[in-house]
Amino acid sequence: MRKNKQQTMFVCRECGYETIKWLGKCPECNSWNSFIETKTSFEVDKTKPFRITDFSSEVLPLNQISDASVSKRILTHITEFDRIMGGGIVPGSIILLGGEPGIGKSTLMLQVADKIITSCLKDNQEIKVLYVSGEESVQQVKLRAQRLNINNDKIFVVSETSIERITEIVENLSVDVLILDSIQTLYSEYIPNTQGSIPQVRGVTAEVIKFAKGKNITVFILGHVTKEGDIAGPRLLEHMVDTVLYFESETMQNYRILRVYKNRFGPTSEIGVFEMTSLGLKEIPNPSELFVEHHTNRVGTVTTCILEGTRPILTQIQSLVTKSYFPQPRRVVSGIDYNRAILLISVLEKFAGITLMYEDVYLNIISGLKTKETAIDLAICVAIFSAHKNLEVDSNTVYLGEVGLTGEVRPISFLNERLNEIVKLGYKKIFIPKLADRIVAQRKDCEIFIIETIKEIEKIV
Image 1 (tube, one colour):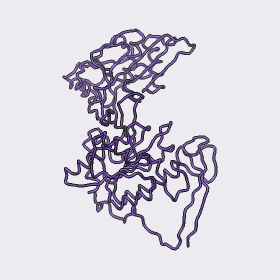
Image 2: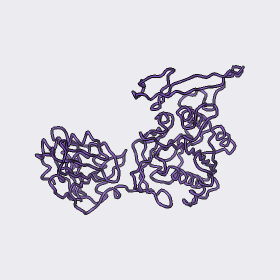
Image 3: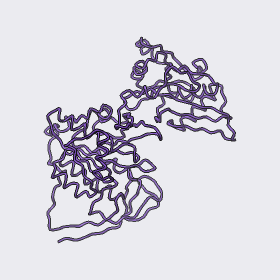
Image 4: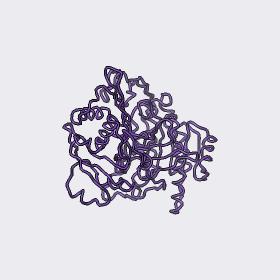
């Protein structure tokens, strides 16, 4: 006996929280007026017994579970991509790639698909990749592949939006890697909502995960972000997948930063740097050389070293201090935590003997980098002091240290890793917080200066 059931639900478009009645404030994410009404219907067949899905498994002792499928990673030989993935792609994993429209997600996926096939052929292993495009025709995908010089007979392309049809194609072709571009365009015939809605995105993703895990298929899910930076509105997909990658870039720049926000099989908070060229995305193996300018002394420009995951990257802090024409001076920052910048400005006024209450202060990390690290506090203070006093800063000097509320310069983490990166790029003069003499004595390849308090800032500049 079959019976159709229909139910009205209210779903939060920010976090995906469900309730049977409308609420003004979401109890899960505390957002106001975020509930939208959706109708769900499903068919119940009471004549059929309960069936275990392909994703279900038998109960096994931990020491008897085979790890062969996860111990062997798939290498793409795109160094930046393999590194942020933790040493390659884990077979059967679900990877979510988000970013603004036109940033290069489809380009990267075509390059990754081609490299995966080439890498597996070297290991005498043949795999098939299915590229599902819900936004473009197969001819348009072919044009992009021609621009990237990709012509691989193991990459299959289909233009389809029905998830039921896609799963049928995957089974018939015995696909090993599936690329869905993009998740907002796919829909299920059994979910009575429009494409791109929260129930459709969530239901389609759940179906893909259940199918892929049961068949051990690696899936790349592409998704556009909203103004708030979320995938398809809610951040629900981030909890469902194994790995979350985001493509970031600044307007009118050719550089792309691929950032890891979640990775069940590797490190998080790692970044990979790429450059968009006419032949596709080109990896930048040493981004520190990209973000710093050598041998040019400038006012308000200070070199420092930030940490992205386990990767030290040299960058420069820029500051501009000008006369304010408003009763309340402006404080504008880019790439730096705003509240942290206000705190450091107050510390400078208190302990460095300068007055900024009648001046506007602008702070920026070049090339669109963003960080909340406190290790760049000293560099920010030096940049503001230099811009205020109109003094040039030595471009061959690097400043590292966290600044406390009482003006002391405090130690930072991963100092040796940062020093190795600094010395590798040819910097020899480094200001660091007061530490044990053992660390300073170990470094014979650079000239290290100790700074204890922000009161010494005029001497070091």
